[in-house]
Length: 563
Image (cartoon, rainbow, N blue to C red; front, side, top):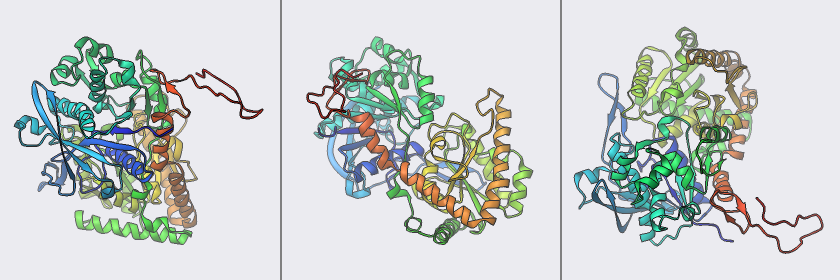
């Protein structure tokens, strides 16, 4: 039985620093998926957008505040396929052109890039593929329509006969509606082709639009309003419709699997939601220096060199000089309020004492959505603190290269989301691969991969899931975090280097063993893309009609019609 051919649709895919087709974690995850699919030579292609201006370029202005800038990108290393298709978007025929990332370029599977920023389109239509996650609702709907409907049509124009459409988040949902059109409204035929990954329980990550706006935008590929409402509601939920139009779905950690199944249990006709824990590509993220370190001394020496590399970058970029002998804690991820970049500063005197005594150095980095005023304000507040505080720096930008430098040069990778809102949080996995210890609230992948006293530290205590006011929760998390820093992390780092090296080694081993995306892609094929035996899947995603025609041995089962 040959493996199914998979078309992986994602609004963002991070393949290389030189190709600005991503914003953050979702793109990093998709990039690792493409890299491992290429490395393992799985029959898969990626489909994403070619963003003319990327997400945005983040820098600090002359007044010391964060600034959002857009710089048009021009690429000369993509293959021009000379392929075009067309979609109807808000009453306008929009032309789409395809480029391709060849496997040898970045070590991925082939990836198709779609753009509307071409001659023959109106200024408005060209704008569709300008900025990733454009804040204009109509442009956002148009982007999803181009990715989904345009992506399916482009693959068919290219002669790629896919067996499975994998929607990485709800952005690609129009692909399912295009298949519904092509299959003359046969939803079961669509379900046999479509699988879906849901990435977050946070409301902002589960898009909702008024159904008539989507209808006007061409999102439903000609599907009637009545049918669309049946699938996603009048306040149309992309996630709900994706669950009803897919054969099977998956959450991105084991805890998230529990949360997602509880969160969406009210959805009639939804497909099963399994849990496949996210992972990152070890071949891309792990520094060769630490990978080849054998002894504890070699491990510590490799980390020291990697810290010096990071600190030279900090000095050149921000004018602060960090000491490689000082414990370095990094918080680097999207600046969203529930991720709580500010948590470590809740008691400024307590953290201030550690900073003044050269016990710790703090690094912050990450982006916010350009329209997220709260995220921007949070970034600026911590940025302004860093100007006055010793041993604190905020670095602008959070692209692949900076992310890699931070993971390689940090001692502690800090993750402080409000449980259970972090579905996975993969950045700590690649930090672990580089000997940084993960220190996190007990959320996302941490539940599976961070073991206190063995390979990292977790913020947990009795009553972790009690229903208490947010302010009380923040203070309890802060107090637990600071107690661990003061009483466990600092003493071990400065007074017991062999123990610190042992924990570094175990962090690397656990990441290499399970949180490598090679494992993740194989698991997707076995649990999501293909059946284990020669069998069909029902529309609900359950195994049916498995038959064994001959006896194998006296101890084997003979069975049929297994559910």
